[in-house]
Length: 553
Image 1 (cartoon, rainbow, N blue to C red):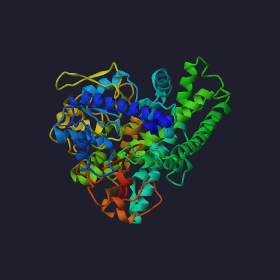
Image 2 (image 1 turned 30 degrees about the vertical axis):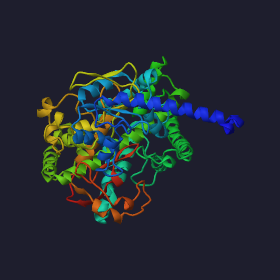
Image 3 (image 1 turned 135 degrees about the horizontal axis):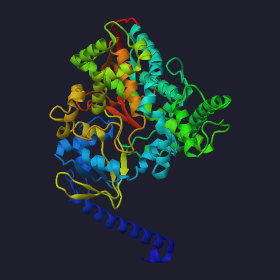
Image 4 (image 1 turned 135 degrees about the vertical axis):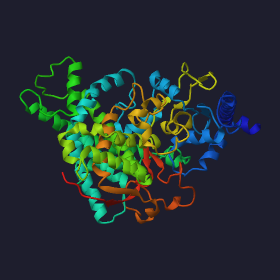
């Protein structure tokens, strides 16, 4: 005591520490009491749900995407369709939603996106992107960009998608001729980047035929994405990350800004400011001028600084989110079809019927784009791949006045302070909505004659409600076209058993030499997803390809 009285600064520090500890203990007790009686897995007063969560995660691959946890927690503990996971103070508590109706209520509620979404996506799409923007800002820019993603406009872009896909076919041909092992996701990414560039702003990234600076920068930016599951503070709070994020984001902004400036100068060079071929960015510019009360037919001599700023961020988020969803799903379509030869034969039979046996879809789709709408089974395959290997889902932050109704009891559950998440992949694999064959690859469930058998709102790969993905129609069209042009000509299959042969190939993917020991399957499949800002097939899906036949035009 004499020591403390002789050192007042020590006394002050001790008092502050005691107050802090007391406040923490009181908050800890209050928090644990709150979640002790709420629906969820077995709860510990000391550890919350960490023990239950740990029991589940130890049965899964170490790098698997966290959006599978809800499914496995439900399976392990027979949980209701709405439940809590209390991991505080390690992580904020989660309110997990596996009921389609409740998920739709949240989608329509207007409660804000979780701040974590902005943290992860701002380095890829800036702070002004439509995915994380809120309120009036989101409404304005969503309405500005909507015309460029109308289905009628996108159908006119099918010839452009076909032309890009021809270069993709050349790449597959090269790998087939060389009997090469390659990362399928990287080749599909090049295709989707080129398609988005041509459709949205008539810019040819040429990533399918040569190295592209923007793609290189974006992949470097992705390599600095933090692992949200990591408990290593040196990884989570790596002081270099913000510097690299800022550096690469500035480079992406410069690249995209030049594309927009070039596109606008082409408009301005015309006497009336009009151009013959309108892209999505042209339609957005016209809508922006219309909403601003300006004459869209007059010559526009300067691009608004506001439009340019928002256009850069949103073009970047479209390039990231659009390529990510589409490229990953194309990979899973090939993977699932190869694993189910009967389904592969059925899609090939349909394409023979639509385009003619021995005839390529290429020229026919360029001349008659609406032929793709006759490919019902092809569309069903895409939807079933999206159901089983969903690329993303929306995360909201609970509020004081927003409660969630537990459909199993009718009880109103609080959302305040919780990461409120309806992981689509868990809803998509729930037998309560998809039947006993929920885990099976069965495209037939999405055929038109079975539409009335689907549970409302249970299929949500692009989310649902007013904040659904603006680019979903473009993604669906592109995937159908790519499959129509390739599944009859090539056999493509995942080759995870040959992963060691890829080695350090300078790609985005780290080798898995350190991951060899342990579980390497999730959902009884080796092609499980990892988190790289969105869900991607692990290791870029190492694959091989074999050409089956040549088609006449």
